[in-house]
Image 1 (cartoon, rainbow, N blue to C red):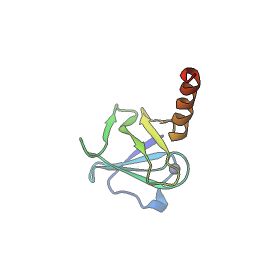
Image 2: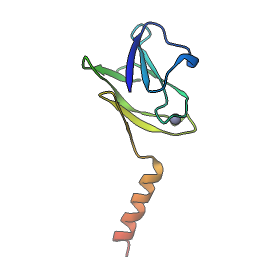
Image 3: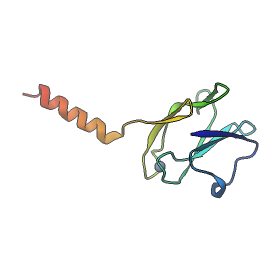
Length: 106
Ligand SMILES: [Zn+2]
């Protein structure tokens, strides 16, 4: 994922895929959902109630992870050093639990 420092937040129709728009003026970042569904994801910067942006001069990271539970895609990912790292969804966790049951159940 690329990043772009902007003064004003671009309109939804002007957002490009795979770009994190960062506005220090409004303390917010905005990007199109990394799963490709096209929905915009807004991440306000705040020490406790929002996200923390780190910038190493080349790449950006956001923490904590971004969980789009309010979007139909339910995607969950991290933006770390400019990379998008998807985190397993709820279904994967269920499968794992089932395996444990099979191993130790009987
Ligand atoms: Zn999505």
